[in-house]
Image (cartoon, rainbow, N blue to C red; front, side):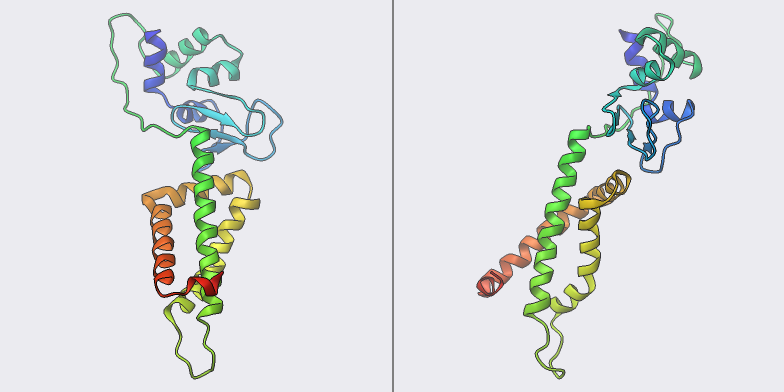
Length: 207
C-alpha cells in the first residue's frame, strides 16, 4: 500500500524505537523488548531491525506492530498519528531521503573481511618483529621492526574483539574499520608489503 511506503520512507526504525522508549546506544544497539535481554542484542538501523538473540526482524511497521500487539495496518496508522503524517489520499508528504543501511548479512560479511585483514596484517607484523629485530645493541632499528613494535598490540586487540568481544563491541569496531575505507587501505597496504618482501626474496624466511 502507498500508506505503508510513505510511513517507511518518512520514519526510520531507530526514530520509531527511540520515540516509543527503546534506548539505543550510539551504534544503534538496544535491549530487545521481545525477549528477556540483559545485554543489548537488538540492532536498529534506518530501514530494518534485527535481534541477534531471538531473531526478531522487520521494518518500522513490523517493529511497532510487535511492540503494541497491533496489525500492520493499525501500526501504520499509529505511526502516522504519532509522527504527524497525513494518510489522506492525494496529500503527498515529503519523505526524507534515508541512507540505505546494510542488512545483517552485510554486517557478517564486513565483520569477516575485517577479521581476515587484521589477522593477515598481524601475521606480517609478527614476522617483521622477528626478522628485522636488531641483532646487536649497536644495530640501527629497521622501520618494519619499529612498525611491528608500535602496531602489534593494537592490531592484536582488535582481532581479539572480533573473536571474543560482545556484539556491541564488534559492531562498533566493524563500523569504525569500514568507515572511510580504513580496512580497504589496510588490506592493500598489507598486500603491497608482502609483495615487496617477496621481490626481495624474504618470503621463504617467513614461511
